[in-house]
Length: 217
Image (cartoon, rainbow, N blue to C red; front, side, top):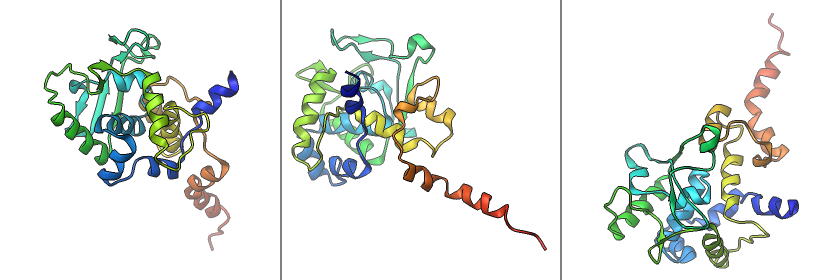
């Protein structure tokens, strides 16, 4: 079981993400087959939210002025009901905040318009009028990636969360990363950087180290 979980959470690479989310709308919608699914996975890519948290997003969660999204609720995977809590609520982290790329904002705006979502509490992502659950989303991910050269290799949508943390680790202050991930402490198992990745991030530090060898005349 440990090995299976590890495979499921291995992150998608940056190259794979470019293949999964092409910049042109025609290519994007071809892969995901609908704007709803494309936007659901775009939000997950941008924010690192957990599947139930993305599924629980409502119109009131969306803050286009600040290019962000916010939630204190999620979808219960067994009942499909909205619950006014997220996974970390009991640990003192009652909310999740995420930033959205211009691509995601464009698709989300179009989705809200096409679906005529006007109720502030109206969910952004529904299938046949029902909230999404992880099993359904993972099945769609598997089918969608068949239209790309990306192989799942045991991974699931949760790998987008790990790809998010891996991309930000070492590039932002740890306190900010913890805020975005809704973690109370840094979790090494979510950071999949290679030694080469870390070397690249440490180049500015090299200048400091090198300066120590310079003798002032």
